[in-house]
Image 1 (tube, rainbow, N blue to C red):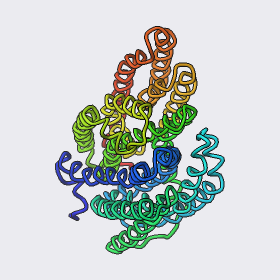
Image 2 (cartoon, rainbow, N blue to C red):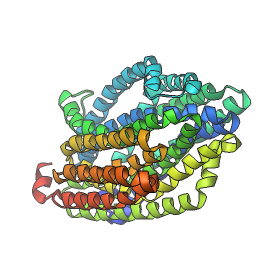
Image 3 (cartoon, helix red, strand yellow):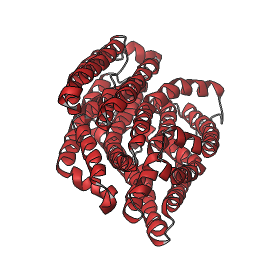
Image 4 (cartoon, rainbow, N blue to C red):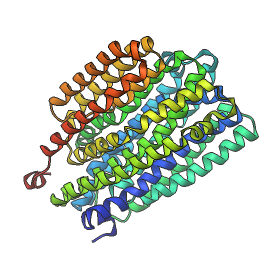
Amino acid sequence: MSKDEYLITDKPLKALTVFAMPMILGSFFQQIYNMADSIIVGQFVGSSALAAVGACAALTNVFICVALGAGVGAGVLVSRYFGAREYGKMKTIVSTSLISFLLLSIVLGVFGFFFANSMMSGLQTPADILDDAVLYLRVYFVGFPFLFMYNILSTMFTSIGESKIPLGLLIFSSILNILMDLWMVAGLGLGVFGAAIATLIAQGISAVFSFLIFFARMQQYKSPFNRFERQELYSMLRIAVPSVLQQSTVSIGMMIVQAVVNPFGTQALAGYAATMRVENVFSLIFVSIGNAVSPYVSQNLGAKKIDRIKKGYHAALVLNLCFAVIAFVTIEALHTQISSLFLGKDGTAFAYQVSGDYMRWLGYFFIFMGIKMATDGVLRGLGIMRPFLVANMVNLAIRLSVALICAPRFGIAFVWLAVPVGLRGLGIMRPFLVANIVNLAIRLSVALICAPRFGIAFVWLAVPVGWLANFLISYVALRRSWPTDKMASIS
């Protein structure tokens, strides 16, 4: 038995913990990597530069999620073939996905470069930071193929049970990015442009190293394979497309929320950008656990070890609970100090207020995000993807409604409501659609009746009730979707 096959041999809690922890650390360093630009430009250039970088974050996260979703589509099949020891098919999937997604990343990079100004203007970016934001975004898209391929390769590593190599590469690139940020921003005084160039170089080096190491790992499996197979591409896309929508919905929602925040001015955007970075740190922990569950489930399904799937899901819930408590305590105790890392002395009282209010509100809802991501991970691993197409579009509609309709009327604090409302139920069955519409109606009714009289914070009291309803529906949906021995026999 190969050492890479511990996901189908070790005790589920141990196997998933050992597998997920490097991914969790990787998500942390990924955000340190991303936050380096914001912290350094905020400290050495000013809050306007922070706002310019922050204005790009929601948009760049959407493109990152395209890469992550594409990787999941390939990773689920790689895991299944790996668990079944069909190494030839596994290598065919790897080769097909790398060729296809490299071409896609180039197309997206060219599109982003030429339409950067239009996209940032469409997000209502404040005029005083628009030029810096567009410059940062264009440099980002020049390096987009590197970022895309790095994320695809990281998913490939985790699909065969190897999560330590991506972690090592990410730590290396994070340190390199920080050092180059300090040199180009603080040393050379290149401002936002220097931060973007530093990120581009670090991404390029990481992508090249990832490819070389993964190529060497694939050489261990001597089975013959095809470099490109159209049928395997179609199989991969059937999982990848819903996964792209599922993983990008949160980022699209954040982008929409940012479009609502932008008209409130540069200082409001600076406060929002600071908290958005913190939100990404914690939310990607739960996303990582969900992504770890997918290959665990897929490998055990391929190996026909159905009984281990439910145990792995329960192990993921334990991990999520632990990190949700850590997130809540950290935010409650240190939200002011965390905001100051980004805003520095240049931040106004309004920027600090926006950051603190938003950050503390999010702390209450991370546990629900964790439960959802673990559940999504099981369904991705089982290949049950179609319901996400409907569910996540409903989620996006909810965010649009709450943020765009209510924020202009009730003020910036109402924007925060869109986040926990939008963090959605699973959507595996029809009652989910009804539940989210009812929840939205409750929140809008409370807002329209109570907010003008008692203040906008009163709206927040309605959110936990809706979350509980979504969780219960998700749990029932998952119970109806557990695999059987018959499913394993046809997988």
